[in-house]
Every structure is written in structure tokens, then in C-alpha cells.
Figure 1 (cartoon, rainbow, N blue to C red):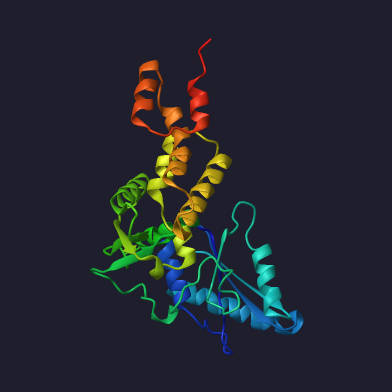
Figure 2 (cartoon, rainbow, N blue to C red; figure 1 turned 90 degrees about the vertical axis):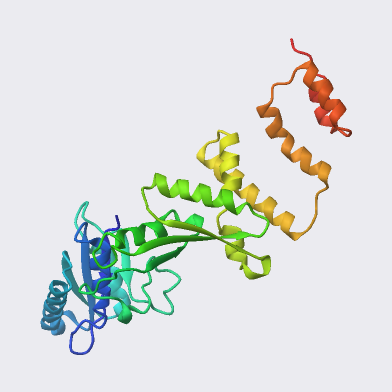
Length: 302
């Protein structure tokens, strides 16, 4: 569960500019875990001390309204950026420290933020209730499951409790979408997350280069891990090889059918137990056998 440090912006009257940020945090945390709400007052500490105390009181009042359980801390700094750095470094004590920073979207920092709530002013308040509706998640594999954890935590709150969670992933037209859907459903079951799974098939031209390389290839990855018992580092290397090979096939037919058979042979050698009868039958069934395969079959047991 994320331990949040929420950075709030105050207006000239020291009122919280985006109170829906606290609404989002309240629904996400459901009163569990650590929540620290911080803000930065720009100026000199001796001159702005009273303003800092007023800002903390305003934030505490808003936290009570939005039912956010946690701590509040305001700091004075000559620059807002320096104050944010101070908050990130100094907030918390011992094991009670944040592991996630939440703030409103900023144009320059949008690519660096872990959580970027957009259209915060339209976010539902704690008094609203959704009797139906969907929480749609377009899942990318390499995010480590964080994208599925956030809507799951939101569903624990009474505002979103009756909404359905849907997981979408993108596949190519020639991918086995049925197997991908089955593998993803199994993965969600192991995480104890109830959600509908949908695989969207799209043409190559409709998929961006990033999504094309990073979206689910569950069938290939599951098959590879079943056939090979590798360490964590070796799994990452093998997964990268699968992705690179997939890209080469997409760019053009760079390998002949015989070369593709050579690539698959190591898996066959691992899985099959060869006898003389099988070797003779294999020679009859296959017209052209690679040279290295003949050398392997010519070895005599000691």
C-alpha cells in the first residue's frame, strides 16, 4: 500500500487550491496507512512564520472536511522547488516515511511524477455514490502492477465500491488473443483482483511504437518460462531476446523457414528423449537436417 506525501498548492488567501486532491487521497487510502500533507510558503522564515502557521491550520481544516487521517506540515523556503525538496527529504520519522509523492500535474514535471491526477476539479466528492459504471485500466506490463493496484484500492472506498473494474490490453491481429486473455485472467486471480479482461486487437499502424514493444505478450513469455528454469537475470535477458526477435519478424522476413526451425531446435532437444528408433523416424520425416544436429545425433553413449 502506498504511503503518501501529498503536495498541496495554496492560493493568496491560504486556501487549498485543489481540495479534490485530498478527496482522491481519502478514497485511495480509505483511512489506512500513512498520509502526510505538505505545502510550501515562499518567503523568509522569520517574516513568514505566522503565514506558515495559518497555512497549516487551513490544511488541517480541509483534511477534516475530506476525512483524511494523517499529518500536516508546511515549510517556508525562498523557492518553491527548494521547499518541495525539503519536504520529500525530511517528512516522516523512522519507518513512518512516505514511498509515493502525489501532486497536481505540472507541465515540466509530468513525465517524472508517479501519480498525475488529471481533471481534479471534476473528481467526485466523498458524498457522491456511483451505483454503476466502470473503472477502465489500460495495462502495460513493465509497470510492476502499480496501475492495477490503484483502482483496486479505490474500489475499497464506498464512492467506487459498486463500479466494475475492466483491464484492457493491446494485441496484434496475428497474436493469440484468447491465450493472452486466459493468462491475464489467471494473473489477476492470483492477485485476488476481480476484474473483466478485454484484449483489443489492432493493426500495426494503429499501435504506437512504445505500446507495440511494451504491451502484453503473455503467451510467449509464459511458454518461455515454462520451458526454461532460469534465474531472474536470465529471464530478463531471454524476455528481451523474445521482444527483439518479434521486432525483426515484424520488420521483414529476415529468416527462412529452415532458420526458424534451427531456433526452435534447442527447445526440442531439452524436451525430447532420443532413441535410435526416434532418430531414424526423424531422419525420414525431415528432408534437410542442420549440420550441427547431425553431429549431435552421431554421438554414441559411453
